[in-house]
Length: 165
Image (cartoon, rainbow, N blue to C red; front, side, top):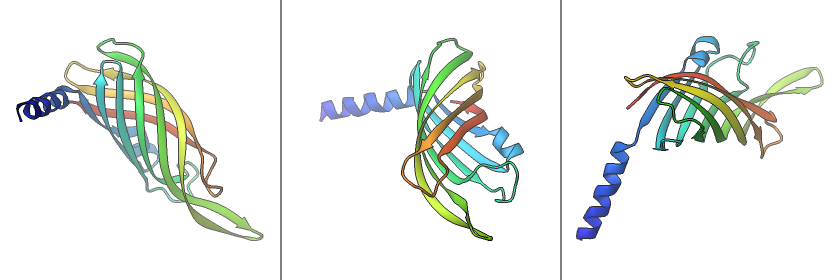
């Protein structure tokens, strides 16, 4: 019983001491009528994992929009520098994406729903203030793997602002 208490205490202490971030992609929100929020938890000074959720509210007829309607993206980041303010990182991700693809049948066109998963990479940089305000910029792409109805490549780009706690 004493060992179980010690293990629980250590796990609780390690969870509460780890740095975490909540972020909003302001580029998507202001330019593309899309909401993307992210949560990131640091494993140590050079690596973290997290998850992003994107909801696209732009119409299919818009000139500039994501093809995906909803995307859920778990990711892993490795930071190449340990500077307290500026950090460069590489990211591996898997994006569960759902959307509609335009299908042309002769003179008519329809939209067909699809669900797919994309494996991809991204690179970026992050700035963190002493007070915990964060800004990160990143870009990359993923390849859809499972469906013939989906678009072959999905983007992973963002300008996030958030808070580290």
